[in-house]
Length: 247
Ligand code: MN
Image 1: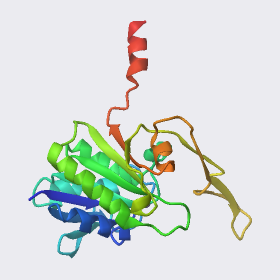
Image 2: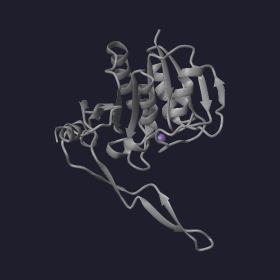
Image 3: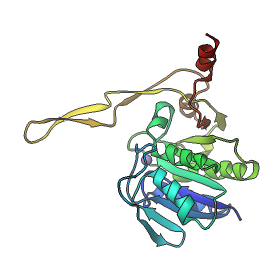
């Protein structure tokens, strides 16, 4: 029976995590190892200046007082009874498209799984602000992809970044394999003043502008498709490298 590690960046109590574990639990033994608290936008940070505590919450559910990457690293090396066959991260309430990938804790958890040579995927639900999250729709898509990955495996050094439109299953038009687009934010830094008149800056929110290039993750989700982007650990720009070497 496959062993599947489930994690996220929203914390162990997040509804998307439990629904993902339930769905993938039909494929094998799903064990949750997730951060104690919300770690959204934690990216791939590791906790190195203090020890980490693993808390067993119930059967096959663990919380670690660290980041998503901590959870995957410590989870795989110290908590799980064996090497997992799959790492699944999510379901994040909010898309991880284009430039978001650089900041995403959800994607970084899957990236850590890939660094440890386990087939990994990150699953996010592309919601608009305040909209109710249709987690079961994304869970169903995650289940289909996870079954495919368990059967066919994953090319080395590659993870899947999956974004599901937040719409009823009948309104999802299909799956598209995509490349990473650009998702740019206007007014992403709010200026506020504390009671003493001191100016502060608050990062978050902002209005996303969507890049218009074809075949991107951004475009597929906007058009109503499940976007599956194969991300590579190697961030080298090979085209530029070839040019530099040719000089
Ligand atoms: Mn999150």
